[in-house]
Length: 274
Ligand code: SAM
Image 1 (cartoon, rainbow, N blue to C red):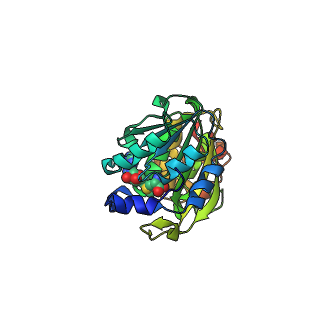
Image 2 (cartoon, helix red, strand yellow; image 1 turned 120 degrees about the vertical axis):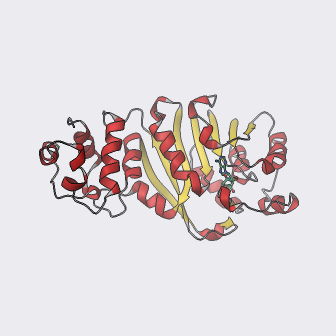
Image 3 (cartoon, rainbow, N blue to C red; image 1 turned 60 degrees about the vertical axis):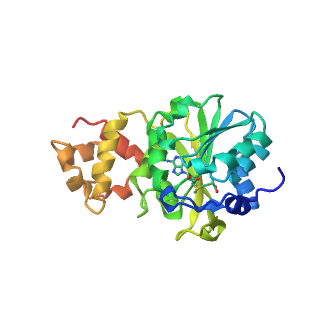
């Protein structure tokens, strides 16, 4: 297969993009190849792609030398296009016509696994949380290279002191090392969305950065970030019999707001009896 022809495939198959499924397709071949290059060496193990759609990114992954690509697509209308791609790359592409939210990373064969996806925006953070809190470090998954709405990407990587600091970013830091690779303008997609995107790369840690009870950390982060403007002594008061003492023990100034804290401080707080 020489050309990606994403636009032509959509026209030839009379496929109109469905907004409800986050269908904004990448038509620029150079961009598709660049995304795959930034995911690292794809020739070892398998690649999981969520939402192949008309298969532009899928083809770029296969042409980069991936021996096995598992592509999970909810919209069955893409089945004929993806079948053609599977024929062009014999025994290297498996298409699963299912909802990605039902797929478990551990069920994908052949390790190590890389996930590469231009995610549908509606489920991008839901999927990321499902993967990282689902013991991703115990799976064979080595990295995730994922497209997010630019603002979501910024929230994921925001450090302490940033107004963009988020619960999602802190959970991500516990299990991965994340960095924004590059920004992708809205004009690179068809149809053109209202917002720009950013490609984010996550290297999966061999073990969580700190050892703790994840469900307890989750409760603390939820309370703190649901009332982001409140000082921690107020937002976390319902969680501890003596919230000031708990904060002091964890080395946290009680008048601080959640965005100021390091992950380590939240983790220390989660080790204190509530
Ligand atoms: N990979 C293509 C590209 O880069 O041009 C399409 C990306 S488009 C942003 C998102 C794709 O995810 C669409 O093909 C859409 O049908 C699919 N999708 C949406 N929700 C899904 C779900 N729950 N499970 C699997 N695929 C889904």
